[in-house]
Image (cartoon, rainbow, N blue to C red; front, top):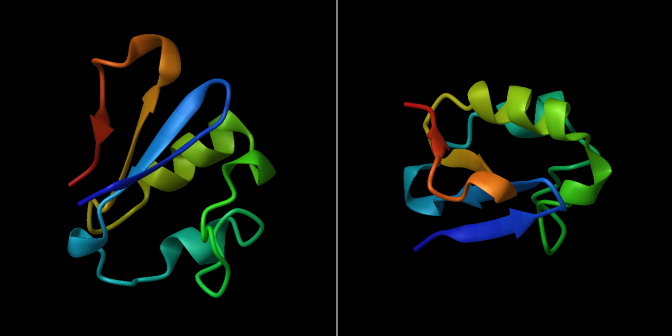
Length: 78
């Protein structure tokens, strides 16, 4: 099961079953990712470019994104 977090431009999808808890998301964008809070992803605290860059650095592929105006083009990193 996945969870989605959206702003006006971008949607991040998190697949917890794939997450290896490397912490790259928290290290890169601590104002966006805080596992001690709910929701743990506060997408509004990052720019679209910051969010895309961070998702691209996710080592497990647990995070992916798509641009809201291009819903069929999901960007997944493996």
